[in-house]
Image 1 (cartoon, one colour):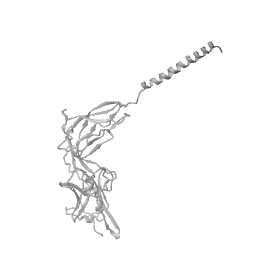
Image 2: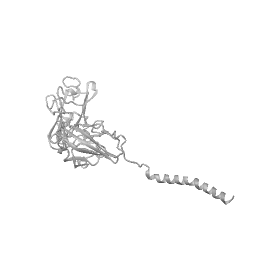
Image 3: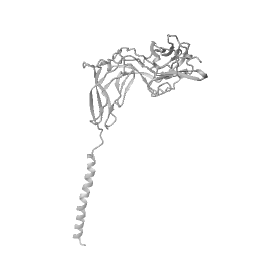
Image 4: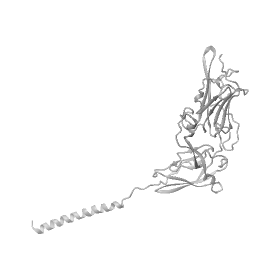
Length: 347
């Protein structure tokens, strides 16, 4: 092969390699132009609830209320411009108040009142606020009729700012329209006007209780339940009254598990009442414990007794009552047999 041919071949290879080298360089240089991951804020993100109606005097968490629609998390939420129906800033929704906050989890197995109270502390919070990264709203129990407006007043309007690194959105003209404070449940007060409608409050269930005079099975309507605050302490008292308002000895309910009736301490039992030292609210949190209904939303108490019926057959009767008390104090729950008394004695 002569020198001219070699030069031509080398030139041919050189020309073929140049585009490859150029392409490699181009691809390498384009790396800095490739799109990078970026936070997104989906324009379809929204609050699924825009009007909030908690009951004053109760710590209430309003959750599952924001649909992020695949927006990049975390999102940051902030209440802005809370205002009255006249458009003026609602200072009562901005000012911090003393609220009771759990710093350790309540389990229902605490052995003393001090052990329960050691798990709670007082912090400063606005009475109505939004959780920073979930969008959940919380109304603290310290909010009451003396501080905040309640229905039938139109309440408050507010906006919420929601941000992430991908953007910012404002959700405007959301509503807070609380119901009036009701210190306990079940309750006969109208939730809007606050007027007591004097509706009968009855036990949750009545089982196999026979009337002493009529010999007829008693029903929930044969009993009235009264709940009343009589002091500013931390106690709960149960009383029982016959049809003419005489006290019934609690010992008549001889199958009642008095030591585990409520999550209370230092039980005092007399011929006319049973009293406990307790922490409020009752129940303390909405989790199932041995002292609550199955869903944990209410305290649940049961009073039972046994007697010998005809033929020496053992009969068991009693009743249950599910309830809430939201306000601290010395409370009494009175069970009145309004038509006939239970037959406790053996045949």
